[in-house]
Length: 69
Image (cartoon, rainbow, N blue to C red):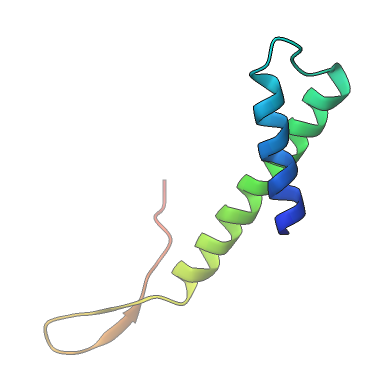
């Protein structure tokens, strides 16, 4: 997600707070941009956790494992 898209999310958020509000098309655009932003943040977090190691008391490194439900 680039800075232009983040700026657009903020612009739509400011406009939504005005008495004029958002049009139906703008609400759909806002929802799509927000979903894209959330997916981007989650992807970055997952990538970071995939490259994270835990060091135990003996100095052994082990990779973090995904928690099973």
